[in-house]
Amino acid sequence: MKKRHFDMIRGMILENYKSFGKLDLNLQKGGEPKSVVAIYGENGSGKSNIISVFKNLILSFQTLNNQDRLLDFQSNIPKNNLVDKTSLLEVFEDSYMLDTTDDMRVKINFQVNDSDGYYELIFKKVDGKPYLYSEELYYLIKKASGTVFKIKGTKNGPNQIEFSPSLFANTKFRDLAQDMVNRLWGKHSFLAIFNNLIEKSNKEYVESNVSANFLNLIRTFNTVAFRGDDSTGVNTFNGLLPDMIKGTLNKNQSDELITTTSNALNKYLVPLYSDLMEVYYQTERTEEGIHYELFERKRMGGRVLNLPFRLESHGTKELLKLFPLFLNAVNGKTVVIDEIDQGIHDLLVDTLVDNLKDDIEGQLIFTTHDTEVMKELDVSALYVIQIDINGNKKVETLSKNNKRNIAAHNNIQKKYLEGYFAGIPYSSEVDFYDILNDLEV
Image (cartoon, rainbow, N blue to C red; front, side, top):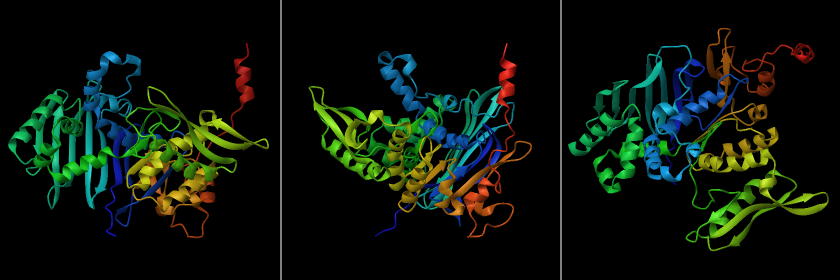
């Protein structure tokens, strides 16, 4: 069988991004990207900020498409339901480190189709307000790597546009792209502008006039899946219901989708719970289509009961939300998850990571407080956010800890909890009785 090309993140460089003054995060081992990365750190250390980099970049690629959709459907959508970001600065709102006038820099190093590259955004401030100063993509152009494009500008728009001579096949398409950059860049990134151009143009026309490597890279970026604290982006599967708890299939959709989803969920959820016998869908056919709702058959109080899944615990619902993200990682996609253990028992997370690690053909990057996971992963996959006395931060893999190399027989979990690698809370006592006395009138 021919070896597949895996598309992964190799690392990131941040400057003045949220709580990170400077960060150089290397996610490679022996020059190759790691397929699993677990990031640890105390509360407030910046774990979610790292995940937000991926989330913001992914969302930034769709701002112009979101703007067009908003204009098309604005009359039918209540204003308080508008959640899609329609400009680059909206996406990166609150990302600029407070009380600094220095540049904010976000650089992602990646590997796609065995070729390395990077994508970089730099923001500056004028009168305290941020603007996009530069955007650059470096990647394989033909047979060699180089600058695919580099755009610089001021708060008023672009003033320097550089395209690789090999990016476009003719000057007409190049002029079209340059015109859109002159009109839209700054409010949107070039990748967002080009995503919009692809969506509006004939597929054959685009493919015949644009570098195949660049188009493949755009598609790869658009398939990165994530879960942050306030949003999720995931690639759907043809055999999986988009809403797995409850919904309606229209008349043009096959009810086979309900069967395939039910079969998949039985293979996923039932092995995780000793009292869960089966999950299934109750359906009702109407003129609108097929209404469905997920149910489970469970042992409770010496009986077997059929219960709607919507009554399940927060943790079990979180497991269901993670399911398509895990499938994305197994299916060769890059997936980033903030707080993978949110509401889920340590041993369940431990089991899932253990089951996943050998099946992943893409990349899974996640943050967690669950130290049980440390037992399942190679020490090189474990990272911890370390903070010095001045609040400066670095993220280091435990296999390259500054103190000394870790012996294979060492209990990594025990050493982490003992503070050997830092990245744990060092707290003083809280006197609740004293607080209560201060509040009494």
